[in-house]
Length: 444
Image (cartoon, rainbow, N blue to C red; front, top):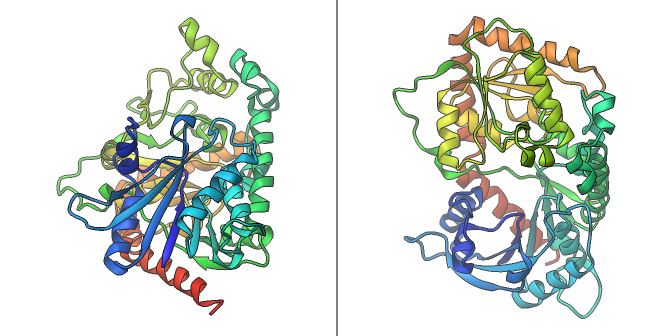
């Protein structure tokens, strides 16, 4: 069975072969590949991914690991990853080139957020002289859902912030309202891509509901996710958590909900509090360069940090590798996911695998991946409610964790047990192989 994976990112082995530097050395794809090798060594696997224009059309092979004989083919194609709301028809030709060469039995598209998902869906199903496996051999598994993101993108944001623009926003045409419009454009592409697929996969009742809306004729499959390998390692015996540290895994755009967390901490009597944020610092506005580059959302976050008396308590860590993320999960007092919309965020699962006390918003598919009360605390986050009301709900959870920290640690242990079961690489690989085999058997 020949299977082609269409991914959003370059695999590190392929990046090394192409001479592309700065590619993270760890990823969930490798874990899934390794598990598939052990379960189905006869599978012939290829991976396609977007690159800059100079690498367009490059192809080759790599081994999953130095100790493995499992060889994977790779195909690089050019895509404008800055303007993901713009679909270019030339992408279909690049997908046709890959299909004509590899001629897969199954195409598996991971995620609907990028134009290449629609391009591959078109290439797989259109009727012309190219090789087309057809819609019954096309599987799309959901990651985020653009239509849902567009609907809730402005959640808990003041009207004046939504429409305002900094210099950077004006030049890039990228203020908060324009960002929402870009997600609406991406949702149109998402809809057409899913409609062309005979099979869709997901993990939550939330994405199943959206699958029914977007692709009512497609067969829905449960398809689990694998985390990055480092998170499956045994935990240290001497974990020392700093009860005064909150860790969050992203804050660079509104749907991540950092403004809600900041408002929840407004005036809190917690002098030792520290907030650590994985991701770029978008709030600094001291130098001329920073003033030119700051977005309206970054400016708003900076103002909140000041008005909520949190100056000097927020640290942005930049983009950090999996090993450093694991260290943050292991030493934080609590991990908070304040997103206003999510499907099945990997960050929650990673935090669970590290037994971190977890607080998360009750949105999207989150209640399906972690149990409120037993494995985490979930707070109400309705996109139509005002910021103060949602922030008050989050603050109650923070206070509850502080009040009974031993119970929070117990929830962390329960969360790890579930995550190890739900995201076991061999279990997920077996699910995928069963889906592929069923798709191949349909037209026999």
